[in-house]
Length: 331
Ligand SMILES: O=C(O)CCC(=O)C(=O)O
Ligand SMILES: [Fe+2]
Image 1 (spheres, rainbow, N blue to C red):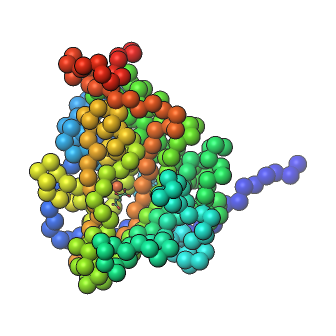
Image 2: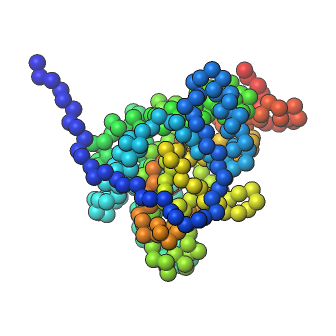
Image 3: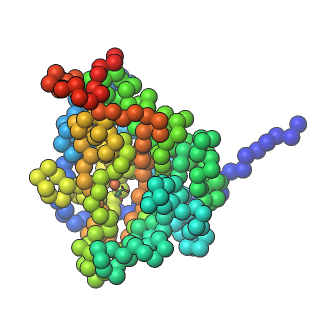
């Protein structure tokens, strides 16, 4: 009987992680949560306590003990790097473009897409390229995806599913913090539900010091993320900064084997403002890293398209609720 052998994905040059900066920067003090204890008796409750402070203050924290091996993460970076190395005319197909302006989050976005992306009224051009890959479900099968990724689709899907499974643990901790049923948020972020979740590879191309000086050394403008939660695989090239409560900009430090998580606007709204969606931006890296093409790996989690994200307050804060919004306790 003939056997069906699925072809091995082609070999790829292995991406090499840049060394951390030696420059002493104003680092943010972010909590590191070891999530490997999640399934131990009382583990969730302990973790929720640890996480509570982080989400009440910055909304940025790092998670370790996630089960992703260094090899798996490097492999994803290698896929991202190989795509970004393709010639522009091959990777930038008009029908496969992601166009935020049209509310479409999937596909490729060139740096300086269509030549119109000038920064802060100067002649300096945007230096960021990204590609967003939708979940592998029938409802999203016709979303733009470059054929380059087809050969790695099984591992991209596996990585994406596990990213969402990790996010789901964090949603459980959020529900515990807010004293809601444990699956309150996780059940509204299913892999099988149509949503704008995406795995993203993103690369910032270095600009000259003179060009960067014209745009205040800004590689991405200050913003908050739209969705529920962003997972950002910790990276050594410094540049990501968060705005603290005091109004200072602090750098997110590299965390060995860590995934940086941040609460997005949807989750801030959903938790009636309790969980914080913090403003962040990316700046030109320090002198020992300013020549590096800064590759990033992310999973952006969004609520299912049909989910109602009516605000829910923490139980302790519901007493004084005026009943004007839909915060009824259903458990
Ligand atoms: O590149 C980074 O470190 C952060 C990027 C980011 O904030 C985003 O894509 O929303
Ligand atoms: Fe962001």
